[in-house]
Image 1 (cartoon, rainbow, N blue to C red):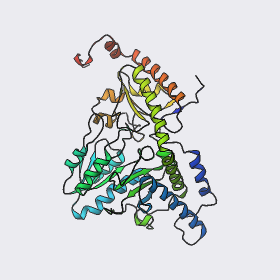
Image 2: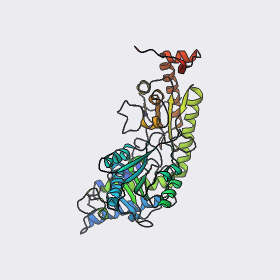
Image 3: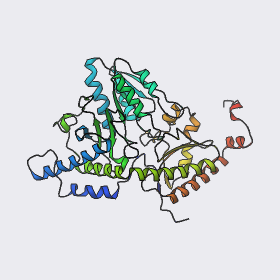
Image 4: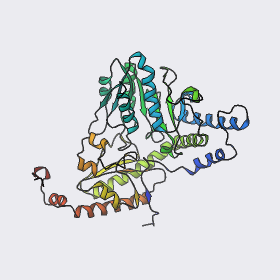
Length: 408
C-alpha cells in the first residue's frame, strides 16, 4: 500500500479545511484592500463593498435567490438564532408563539427553542422514524393557528439523513406558516433551491463548504411571502438593518468564492464523494460482523456515514483510531460522554449509540486513505471485541436479551 500521510481527516461535517483557491481569493482583503464595507466616502470602502456584494451574488445564485435576500452573520448558530428568535419576536404581537421543530435538530436550534419556551412560547418537538426522518404529514398535523414558524434541517449533522424538505415546505406554504431550515450541512453538497423547496429562511455557514470559520449567512425571503423579523443585534443598521456589525470582508469574500466553487463542482464532486463513501461502507459492513449503518441510506448526504459496531465501546474505539480524525457525534456535543441524542431518538439503545462513529468524506479524501481506515477499524474492533465477555457470549450463540443480569 502507498504510504499514507497521517493523521487522516474524516470529520468534514465538523469543519472543512479552507480550499487553497478560497484562501487565495481572501488574501488581498487582509492586505491592500482592508477597507470597511460601510465606508462610503472613499475607494477603500468601495472596494470592500464591491467584494461583499459579489460574494452575496454568488451565495444567492447557489440558492436560486435574490442577492438582497442574503444577510451575512458570524456563522450558522447566529443565523439560527436570528431566524427563530427574530420571527417569533416579530409575530408575537399577532399572538403567534408556537414553533414546530424535531428532536434531532442541531443544538443551535434546540437550545434557541428551549430559550423561547422560558419566555412564553410553546414548542412541538416532532419525533423521527427509525430512519431519522420526519414526514410532511407530521408537520402538517403539528401546525396550529398560533404557529409562527416551522424549523427543520435539510440534512442531519450526525447521520447525514435528508428530510423531505420540498414536501415539508409545501405543507408549510399551504398552511400559511413560515418555514426555516438549517441548511448548513446540505449547502454545497446537494442542490438547495429556496423556490423549489418552499423555503422562507435558510441558515448557512462558510466553513462547512471549504470556506473560513466565523462567517455565515441567513437567507430571508423578500416576496411571496415577505418575511419580517426583529433584529437580534443592534448598532449601525448594517445589512439593511437586519444584523448590525462591521462586516468580515475577507471571510465574506471566502464564503462567496467557496459557494461558487461548490456550485460549479457540485455534480462531479458529489458523485466522487458518494462513490468513496459507498466503498468504505461496503467494506465495513461486509468485513465486520454486526456493523450497522444508522439512518436512511436512500435519503442521505453523499459523504456522511454514521455506523455502529455492536459490542464495542465507542470511546475505546476512538482512542484506538488515533491516526484518524472521526467523531462519535456532532462537533458541538463531542465533549459529552452522553450517547448521541440523535441516535437515541432514532431508537438505538445506549450501548449501540455509544458504539457509533460519524465518518464524513470530503473534497480531499482519497480511496487509499479509506482503505487504510477500513483496515484499521477492522483490526481495532476485533481487538476490543476479543476483550469483551459479551462478544464471547454472542459468539457462543447466546441471546443476550434472554439473560437476567443480577445487580452487584
